[in-house]
Image (cartoon, rainbow, N blue to C red):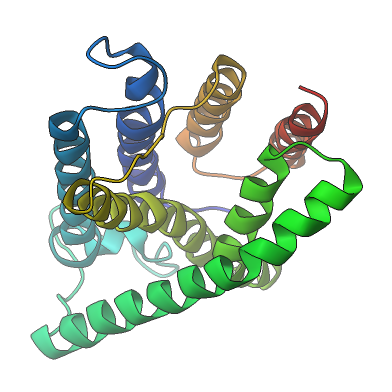
Length: 238
């Protein structure tokens, strides 16, 4: 199946920058030890993430909207002609529904986290499994929708959902959490281990190679699944 690599590559580029700012920079900065930011660093990281997400949304919905639409069958869209812009009403309603849905899903994850922690502790699994379970719960709606779209041969919609949900998870959640942590003077650790950094950048590298050609193959899917299973296995046996 084919897809527009102009949009997917742009989304992957923004996601790579966001993930580096939030998950890697806390481990390499020297103002504070370990996986923590100073307050000023945390504020800048939150603002940078929100700015990147805002720029991506403008690129996706206004300036280059056709990059995220399925390829035309009868005629090719000229690179200088873009799809019709959404109305202000549609944009406002979409933004409000996005924030409401995000709050509901995050609230549900927070409500279920004690039960998940108790189950993980009873099973004797590492604490990292709790984070994986909550992350999968938060991303479940978009993930399910992306799989359904792919099974229906709507790969462009599937990629938009998958990459867009990852971008929203960082671009909206991190600025909110950072603001709360700074305002209430709460500790917040964001950095990830060197093992997870390696897997993350391996995923980005293989993802860039996959999206570059604008078509899918079975081999690409197998590679991504094996990387995901490797992450799950090393989370249980680090």
